[in-house]
Length: 205
Image 1: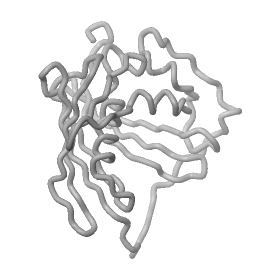
Image 2: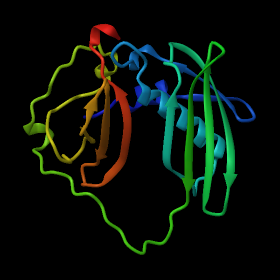
Image 3: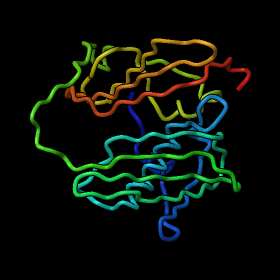
Image 4: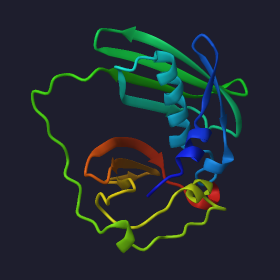
């Protein structure tokens, strides 16, 4: 899939409003099915954390986001606090509030690169190039964020667009796990994600 970077950057933009405080806006054009897309909300919060930590030699290494309530369209206030800052690692937390209600909390680890004593990576599966893969049209009126993406059902890292692969191993009692990977065209693993999701009929959302 490929994205319109300008649109995503605009949807996840934050503005500093005071020490440790930022404002953002939840835009309906990046909604998931029936609600604002959690990943876009997480990206917005992470941008506030990066802006507050403001250290170019530290990069976010892991981010955990818990949604106590669903985000809603409109302004959001994000409060960021650095809990610990060491020589090589730091812990940063953030809370997003809308309409006086805590919507989500995030905890992130920032770290400098360490010398590699050993390195390994997962191998991406083989896949045809985007030009060899048929594009799939998804109903943007039901899932608005798909209007910004181009989907091709393949597995592997094609050159150019970023490849996304998501897999689930277990679904029970309305909950299911989701493991995600993002691959670059030159076979580099860009990011991984893991989340526990609710499985509901689309009409109920």
